[in-house]
Amino acid sequence: MPPEPQTVAVTGAAGFIGRNLVVRLRETNLRVLSLTRETPLDEAGQIIAAADVVIHLAGAVRPTDPAEFTRTEAYAGWICDEIKKSRRRPLVILSSSIRAGDATDYGRSKCAVEAAFLDLSRHEQATVAVYRLPNVFGKWARPNYNSAVATFCHNLARDLAIRIDDPAAPLLLLYVDDLIDQWRALIAEPPSASELVEVDAVHLTTVGEVETLLRGFAAGRSSGRIGAVGSGLERALYATFVAALPAEAFSYPLAPHTDNRGSFTEMLKTPASGQISYFTAHPGVTRGGHYHHSKVEKFLIVHGEALFRFRHILDGDIHEIHASADRPLVVETVPGWTHDVTNVGDGVMVSVIWANEVFDRERPDTVAMTV
Image 1 (cartoon, rainbow, N blue to C red):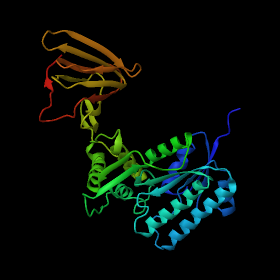
Image 2 (image 1 turned 90 degrees about the horizontal axis):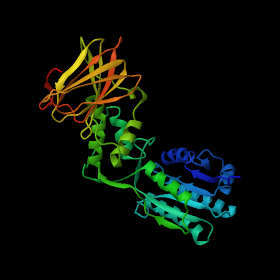
Image 3 (image 1 turned 30 degrees about the vertical axis):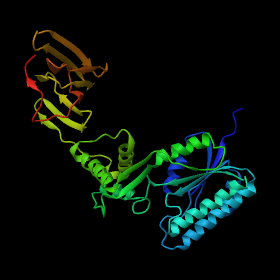
């Protein structure tokens, strides 16, 4: 029989990090139990008593009443007492802050909570991994509460103003999914001793740089332009911005260019990977009739049938390709060959096009010549 899954108790499960964490942990072979403000203490005690791993996220962030910090420390002490009574010696992952120890109520409270859990380690009642986190951001963060990134994304997604006092102010950012990846790895291979863990995947940036990126994402929805959002901080910020969109902004219109042949519509333009467009053609219509020196295009017929014709502009060699939506085929234009495409079907033909560069009216690299 397969081994029983580990039980993971998550305090503060209804918060920003907690909500992301619980979803991600439940995607694995773990039994995840959530504790929130609404969880009765007797039920919470049973959950802690059953836990192989305790992830402690609960704590005051921006309380209006400083007494909240005292309650935060008291709750941490209660969790520690329940761990002692359980005699399970669990792995404890403690969410702390890079501000732990600074001269504020928040910093002092974080240090006090760290000390309470590390005392478990000194008495060999738990293995404790302390994570002093920078600004954590990602989907489901609350604007005007969890982070400046959450506020910027929320406002820019709704065309609202954002306030920046010092664009050059440094900002240490950690994407919530990168943090959870580290915690999942730690659960899979627990440390042999308690430690203050150095967090990976932290991005050092500035408030102004983040603002510029986020404004670009917002503007790109109308201009059709998007930057390099496939990795790193840009990927994380882009996902966070899109997650902040209200439901009515999940779609946005494009502007087709229509004539008696059909239509042509640009969908997406990138600085390094060209652009994506699509066009339609009525039966019998031929489009194209030009060549390129450097530009390369890829065509994919997604509806209807097409005949692609090519002629080498120097030696006159001819080449033809039949393509249809029933037989997916990428047809690539080749520099130095003039080319066109004809709708040879009975209905409207639709083709997706990728070009390796964004169209530049000043340097179009498109020279008319019949096939």
